[in-house]
Length: 268
Image 1 (tube, rainbow, N blue to C red):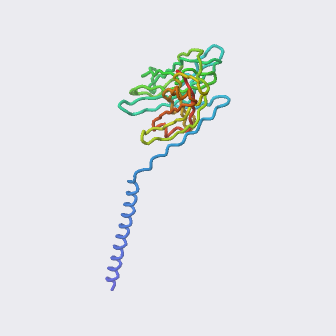
Image 2: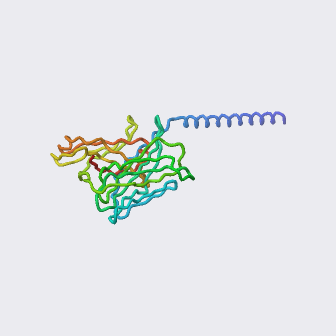
Image 3: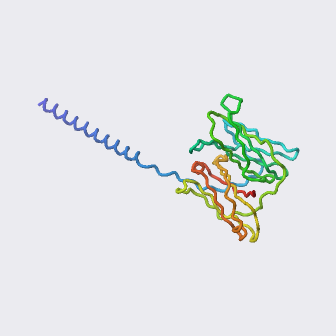
């Protein structure tokens, strides 16, 4: 009798263990199936127009960046590289290094032909491993105005920090006309795999402008510049009729980080 009870208990234990094993297998199978499902594509945010700043500019810092921000122009003020630049890499046939940032004209006059340099340094070295040169995308920068820049070159082997400086600029120049922008749209274009920002430039009918372009500056949530591009020339015939369309394209990397935009006009 005791042997029969022992045999029954052993049988029940085996059945119990088999049921547990089956349950665990079902849970693992369900988890694996869920993990293998394709992830939903990340929705690109809709950008907001940046609010015009009043008062002193905002300064942001990053540990691996060094700035030489001021190029003085007599006693009338200075031209300054703002501490909101970013560095990133893009992959293609060649790995390219990009630096986007912004300068401000705090002089009493418009300025033009602003040159911008970036020196790349190793972690503990004082000898630059590469030099980058460029210009703001706005040809003439009015007093109190900010303009973005986009420097790029083939990525060097090793670098840990960079220095930005303004070797020189010229005083004077005619800023782009003050025209209104309307019907601004922005969103991710899956077919082009790019973030598209577009709209219309408004002008008095019959007005004539040569080689007018729209410059877009994109900022992340911390106010750092993550995009700086300019449109193709606005069609003069359309602008003379009262309005002309424009469109700018940014890579998907920018779409994931950009939160605000600023639009300016430049004439080249």
